[in-house]
Image (cartoon, rainbow over all chains, first blue to last red; front, side):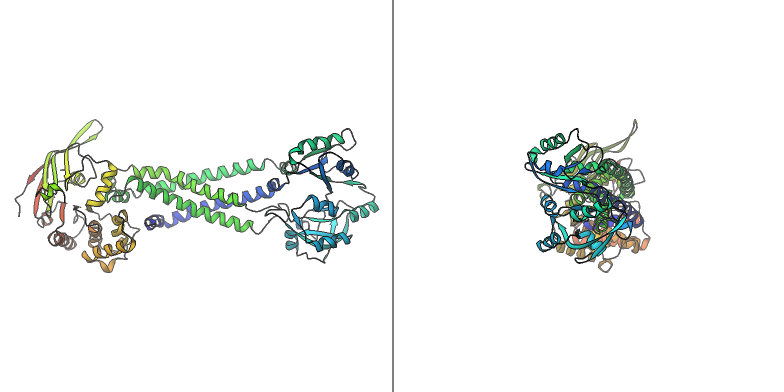
Length: 383
Length: 235
């Protein structure tokens, strides 16, 4: 700590240069934070997916529906502990930008399969007693200012091109940080009754979620499910929930690879910018480094001083950038529902902090070695 | 004090010192077969024309460079055989440097500049502050402690440089043209200060200078020409 003023003094030497370098690093780390949050928004569900859950969808495509009668047959398959179905409703509340997922479900079955959705017992009871009842996740409730007792009109472009009315009877929270609480679930019997009157999609559901008795046997159970419906008019494709979510995200591309490629380019540029700044900073004070050596500073101490300087620069810039990204991400999904899990995970913050230190070491090491190798007599002549 | 000095030996002793530089295939002999002794408490002026090897000699005495041949013994310690790391520690303990161009850190205040050598000691913050205050008071700049080098005159900057040189109470103060960049008045002030340090504090000083006026303040002057020394009678 006693050398802190020496390090700080050197950074203050060229204030504009230091400020611009800091700004460059800051912008890079804001980008890093936001890309990590977007990645989390797209594939974060993979980590949160239940290891004991399988998704069963139509073999051809997720948009092809499956018969509701499959449920009873699935429940008889060995290894299956429970089955619940969902169907994409795709409704619009007031404006398309207010996007959030809505699905009709059978309440008891659904809540048994998805224990991560926490609903107070009184609200669950109200849901079971209200045919038009719907529960909505905390994030969407807060975003659209829904509260229990509200009557919410939702226009469905898929199901009858009409406005459906729902009574909000409950607001659910997530058990874990990052659990998606942007969706709305409403009763399947209400949905089925109305669509029957529309005479469209009768007896069909979107996909099934199966809970298996033993996660270790999940792949065996998946094979059994697909075997059960083989050669039927609606063959199935069963896969772990994580793989299903990953496949969904992969429609955009390999998100992790895309993010890594962008960040690699950004950090390589930062490496050059900061490295050049540090080299210049050391070159222009060779005489001063010579003085420090003359009065007894060792090679190791000079190496540490220069490295500390470059690390301070990258850690301050990186820290501010990560803080700005975290602050932005903490306000939640900026897209209004397309990235429900948009947030900056702690692990990415720690990776960012690690990158900022590594960047400081890498950019500082060459100038530091240059400072260390100075011959005092030569350096003093360059004061 | 070493056994050598306790027996009345010199503080600085150079025996058969040679320094050869290489420029490509050319060999430049800057110092040859040089012998020099400086007693403790002496104020020695080292004079000579440009390129005579004065600064090289000062660098050898200050442990900034190694001789090609010969021995350099300071306070009984052979420094010509020390490693770079050992020399760094030795310089921090024994040598105070005063440079022609003051060589202060522009980003540090006067007191922070003076404090620099103390950062290499085990002194706590309060003790360091006290040492710095004492050194600045000795050079008459206690009131300028918070000033940055750019706001000080040349003479004041050099006095800060001297305060930095003496703040650790070194065995030997080495001054390389300390008045070379100052006007006569400021130069006189610096020389008065060095003389006072020598006479009142008993500080051993070796000063490289071109200026006969400056060398006149020393207790002994030696002339260096073509790498060889020639003595002047002691005053």
